Image 1 (spheres, rainbow, N blue to C red):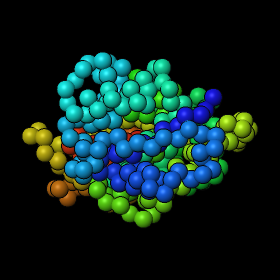
Image 2 (cartoon, rainbow, N blue to C red):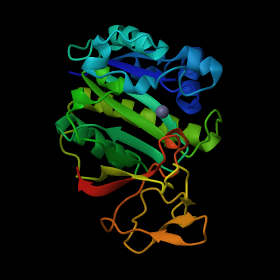
Image 3 (cartoon, rainbow, N blue to C red):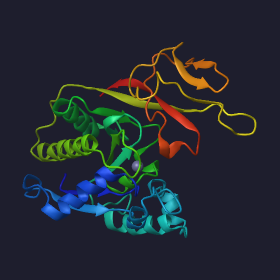
Image 4 (tube, protein in one colour):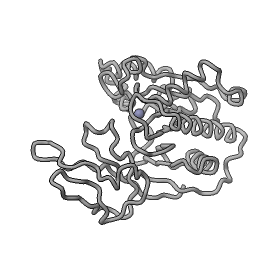
Length: 289
Ligand SMILES: [Zn+2]
């Protein structure tokens, strides 16, 4: 069954395209084709972070939704907010919402990326539908752990996905990023209508990317960066990266080349939100869904 759908922006308060989409649909009304058979609700998750134009106030809201974290009674603003959102959208594990669609931006050149957390029948059908109707979209599968073990807001739903659109600087709205956000949101909602009609079971297989691991910037013993992302890797998200190709330009003038699995499909390259953790990019392998 797929009836109640929640569309969420502002899980990160400076990721503007989903925020603007929710605001626009609140203002102009949800497109009529989605309201006759779906119960679609609109949410701005972290209003305080949105007002402050920051990712979060105290803690990352999109890391608060593990079962353990929800039970911990943490006192950070986002921990309190997560419990409220879990009551509204969930509760996780016994959710009243059939699908949570959580819209994000990335500063990386990832285009319109649909993130799914499980390669089960529903998500495979969704991935195939998205690739068929929006071939330029990317499918990213993060199934390194079970769906419910993820700490993401979208796991409050019976099912949940994230839309990750980029590249867009934090706090900035770019027209082409907004339009990709709108197109991918429409495509996912169109899938919901088709799924209700039982029209999604015979779609052709599609290609996706399965998350591998994170790659750190090279750091000195003092914890200082010794290199930047190489210009040939910058903005090359989801382009095959082969052994021997440069990934870092060191400040001493040398280059570091890729020595890992070949090819890999780098993404979240130089993502601003991961800079504090010194994450340079994430790897992925090809997967057929
Ligand atoms: Zn985000």
